Amino acid sequence: MSEEDTVRALQLLEQQRNAMLMYTSCGWFFDEISGIETTQVMQYADRAIQLAEGLFGLQLDSAFRDKLAEAPSNLPRYGNGAGVYEALVRPARIDLLRVGAHFAVSSLLEEYPESTDLFCYRADDIKRQKIEVGKMSLVAGRVALSSKVTWERKRISFAVLHLGGHLFNGGVREFGGREEYDQMLLQIKDAFGNTDIAEVFRLMDEHFGTHNYSLNHLFRDEQRKFFRSILEPTLQELRQYYRRIYEDNAALMLGMSDLGIPIPKALTTPLGFVLNRELREHLEADPPDIEALRRAGEEFSRWPAQIERASLGLAASRRVGSLLQTLAESPQDVTLLERICELLEALAKIGLSLNLWQAQNSYFRIGSALPQADMRQRAGRGNPEAERWLQAFERLGRLLTVKVSF
Image (cartoon, rainbow, N blue to C red; front, side, top):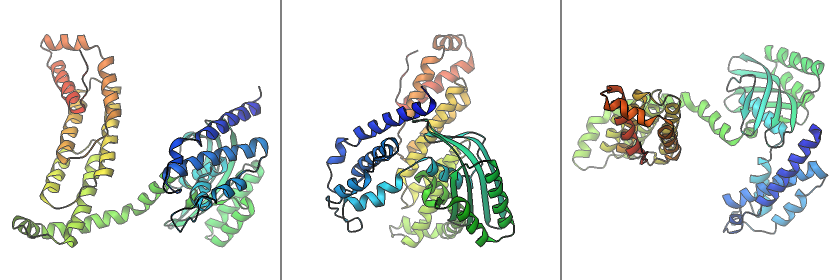
């Protein structure tokens, strides 16, 4: 079977899989057609339609949209299912050019090695150049992209201009050969180096045509990541400013609290922002700053500030899971074992709700793989390190509510 036939067969399997997934039962029990379940089912259907277009030349999305228009929405901004399709489903459609647009824009934010994974896609043979002029930057290059699901593969060229803030303009196209690529690269780099931004836009239109992309074409998780990076300096300034407000008024707030007098929201809101942000920073430090976490927990218990339990609980669960994965690579690292125990005890006092299934699985695998009898024997012979490890490992098991028999 040729590579083209293999890709076509895998696309057919993917098309059939999505055709079945669109009948998922949760999508048909709803009181609003723009709900997450129905939107997901429509995305399965749209993926099946997209693959059918490429495989068989069928044009099905117009008929699909007409059918959806018969289902009313309770929300005026959508009107009906067709409005939901246009607003929430069609923009989520992905092909290799869209993956290329994601890669191009995200390459402004981070350095990629020669090969990397992008969710269920693979980027290889990455060649890119980045130029910065003041707050503006330009990235241009080429990359080979492939789907891990269908094995479809394309080489693309790209150029993305970042004007500062959230303002982007990018172009992506299939790679048209080395000569064409070198000409595009030279012309766009020269125009940008001369700060002739109008000429950069014109050249992007000339080389990439209608395949223009913006921040909207980043995958959703990367959009959030981008805005976090853009906002980080502002949030740091706010943290310092709010921390000064807190420190300047701490004695006053403590006196009001002792007398049962409500503290104005103008003071508790900055306080909550500072404490939540510092709690996250202590948690994400490498290694986690456990003593600072304890102090942050005590501060939360002292003041009427709300802990961001959902987001911090998720971050804490991931941190613990990551530490257990590190422990699995060096399972006899007793210092790391004790640090994880201290972290879990500090988090318990703060009262975060943790989802620890990944950490529990890692703990069980560690306990099952180690030569347990040997560790017991060494501890029995008076080996202090073995005894220390056993105590820490059993302590961690209690904190994770997992028991491994030795």
